[in-house]
Length: 114
Image (cartoon, rainbow, N blue to C red; front, side, top):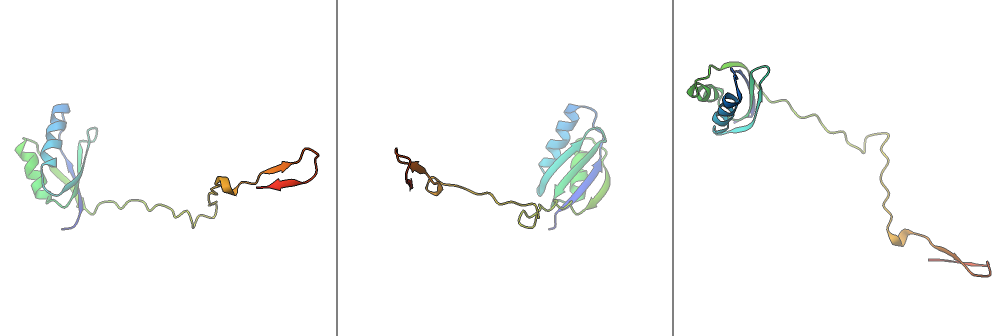
């Protein structure tokens, strides 16, 4: 089955209602992500579940769901490839053996490079 995003308008009166809605929907098979916008009263469910099953589950807890939309989930924004970035500067890692130590003799002549 394909993954889909379902938006449902449902009354959210209190924290108890919010908890009941979240618990009822997460029990369904195929649910991957559940989010609830309490200000807009919109439940968003992403997964392979059937939208009708989500609505029926909400009716079981005495909610009146109104399906707003069913469609594919939003694809995540692609991360920019740092190698294609013109401002990309690779990091240089130095180990102790890469260091150069210059020691001068007491007389001031000559040096040793380790």
